[in-house]
Amino acid sequence: MTKSDNPNLVNMKTNPLKIAIIDSDEKLHPLYRFYFSDESRYQLAAIHTSVNKFMHHSVGTDFDIVVSEVNLTGISGIDGISYFNKQSEAPKILMTSQKCDFKIIKEAFKKGADGFLTKPLTKNRFFNALEELHHHGVVLEHDIARKIIHSFQIKTFERFSKKENQIIELLTQGYTYKMIADRLCVTPSAVNFHIQNIYVKLNVNSKAEALKKLQEMEIRQLNAA
Image (cartoon, rainbow, N blue to C red; front, side):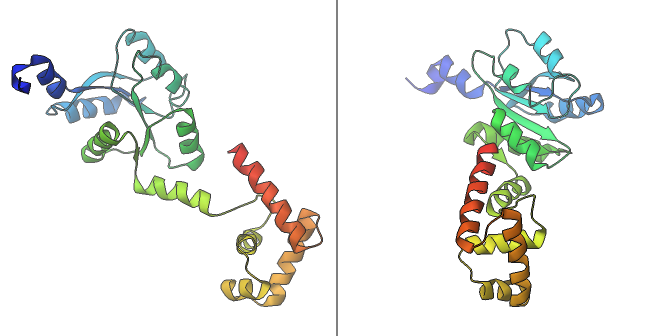
């Protein structure tokens, strides 16, 4: 039997995915509807201004993808993730925000988001994101991916200055004082001055003690993330 002989297989292939959008700016709702007006792959099945309205009007309805703004009146979009996942089949969740803030992005993914987009959204960006989410299960634009990678690549501790953090980064990579001075284009005496300040702030007296304490601090910082 071919696919054309089996109506169930045809429906599986042609039925558009149901999309729900939650955006507090009602002026954007006509734009979203326009985006979907000539789209056969996706159906705008619901559009609301808050998580509360989504919950009230979407009882018993399953969506394939929920697109929610982060900043909403009442329940925030991030806190709403747990409500979106109460469907019989959990949808993919795409968060949107005016800000590319790593803390917000991290919190969204910790709560269960599958993607994150910064506004404003063009039609191409929006549907490319839906395609990525549908086919690959996750979507991250380059600027957001870079921000996340950068946050893990550079160790920063609030108690230290920018220069001290730069020295700490190199120190933990095994650089000698002279190598640090060459890398940062400063004198060895300047490096020694900053390292002495680091020792005072760490309450240690040697490089070995400093490295051990910095490692402990990094572990605590990662566990708190």
